[in-house]
Every structure is written in structure tokens, then in C-alpha cells.
Length: 279
Image (tube, rainbow, N blue to C red):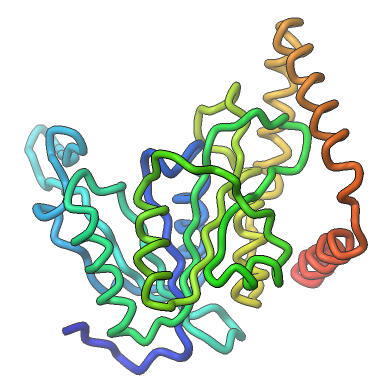
């Protein structure tokens, strides 16, 4: 039984998991950014012994003045956030991807969501892809029901194959008619080293759209500009990589030329206006 200080208002769950589902740490850093920007408190944790192999996902030891002071065990943390001026609460879920008992794990998440009154879930992930760093980060995903993704203009994924906990959790929630959206940011595979603030920004833009709230961006825009400039310098030092990036740019621009629709332009303009209102 979860003890709440008050009843939550139309809560939406937003979740991301470290590891396989989190290239460039873009998804997990999006959750941490939300937790830092909003009034947030810890609600509960899943028992780590049930879901983690500690030889694979190892605990962390803190040593102070030569003495072991604490062991931090890998776990999934559930927090409640209250965005300023929003008409709903947000339940933030984050932690390493579990090593075992995924069906029990997602059943636990579903039980928590039901107890809190969650009827909408947003899953965040990031993957390595043939994407140029000089272009907007592509976001693909899936929605249940399908019409939901069409409403938000989400580019539906065509992927079928091995999945991570994001895919399993999506199916678990969708199977009981919980409105569920999964978003995946495409990280340029030639700069996979985290962090990737540009991808985190891309995910947060969709979080704003889905939750209909403003997310203070802090230093993320400047970090994204610096990240891109640093990658530009690195690619310029190797002509083979520079040529490869130019090829990705040409392929991207050619593929997206017919898609510069009025709806897409309108969505980008609305996002620009929100950013302008924040500044």
C-alpha cells in the first residue's frame, strides 16, 4: 500500500530505464532533468533483490576517509512531480533495466500505476542509428491506441525484433487498455558516448506536447550547441568520417523533403513559441 500526502490529480507516468534502452543516456537524463526542474518527492522503490543480478548490475560502494560508509543498490525509483501551473501530477519512474523476471517487474509497475490512478503512460528510450548529428534528432515510436500516435504526428516505428524493458512495459500497459506512448530518440552511432543533450532536448519537447506542460530547459540548449560544435570539430579531423556524415546528411535531407508538411511546421512553431514564453 502506497502512502500519499494527497490524492494525485490525473497522474501521467513517465518512465525511462538505463542500459540497453538508453543510448547516450538521453532518456534517463530526460527523467532526471524533469525531477530537477519540478517539485518532486520519492514515493517508493522496487525491491532490488527481485530484479537485479548484482554481478551484472553491481551496487556502488561509497568510501569516506578510508571507511566504507554506504552501499547503493541498483533499483527502480518512483517519484511524484508537480509541474508548476499544470493541471495534473506526473509519476517519474527510472532505474537500470532489470536483469531478470521482466514479467513480474512490469506487473509491479502496472500495480503501482493502478494504485496511483494512472491512466496514461509515456515511455522514453534512445537508440543508436544512422543519424547525422547536424540535423534534428529523429523521434520514432509507437502508441496504443494507434490513433493516439497519429494525433500527435508521431512517426511510427517499423522495427520488429529483440526488445528491452521499454517494449515489454509498453505491451503490458497497452494490454489492459492503458493509453501508452513509447518514444525513441535516434543517437548518431559515431558519437555514442554519453551524454547527448541534443537528444534529451528532443525527448523533452515531446514530453511537453504529450503532457501539455512547459518544461524549464535550464542549460540544456547551451549544452546541446556545445555538444554539436564539439562533434563538428571531431568529425572535421577525419576526412573519412566527415564524408560519411555528409552522406548521412544528404540521405536525411532527401528522405524528409516531401515531409515538410504544414502540420509539422506548425508543431515546430508552437514549440518555438513555448520556448520564447519561458525566456
